[in-house]
Amino acid sequence: MMPVNFHFNGESYNPESVETLHGFIYKITYEYNNQKYFYYGKKNFYSTFKKKLGKKELALITDKRLKTYKQIKKENNWRNYIGSCKDERIQEMILVDKEILKIIPNSQNSSINLTYWEMYYIITNDAIIDKQCLNANILNKFHRGRVI
Image 1: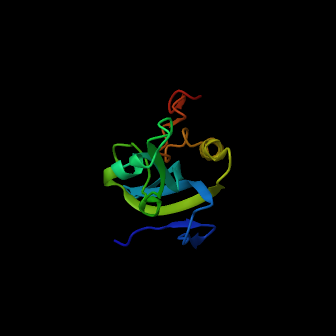
Image 2: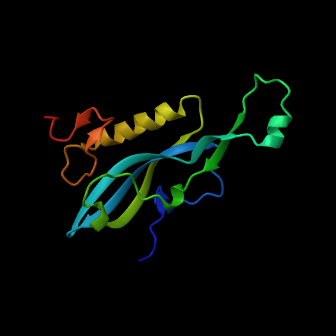
Image 3: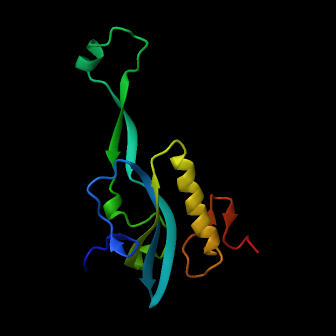
């Protein structure tokens, strides 16, 4: 089976660089027992983490109040990402489609925007009410079966 790549606005999405972008909202479609299921989520293009400075780098620091680590920004494996769905049937499902619904550029509020737009797509598509949707909650506050 060929790998399924993300697409955006009907075209394959595989840019050279995503330096100016923060993340995206996606809809992944699966097939199980001849029925289509889908999942909405968000994904960052980059991960950041702290890395301790080595002995040589530490030796160059004269002011001991300075940080002893550096921030590393690394493109994560978003191109091969297949979703964060926790449904127990997911292992048996066939991945059919990976669609990018919205791209969020880098900004001061990009993390908040990413969360807002994920929530927007889940709510406007009645995701936690629709039986074909694999999203079970919104922000871990509104859960499937508890919403009237």
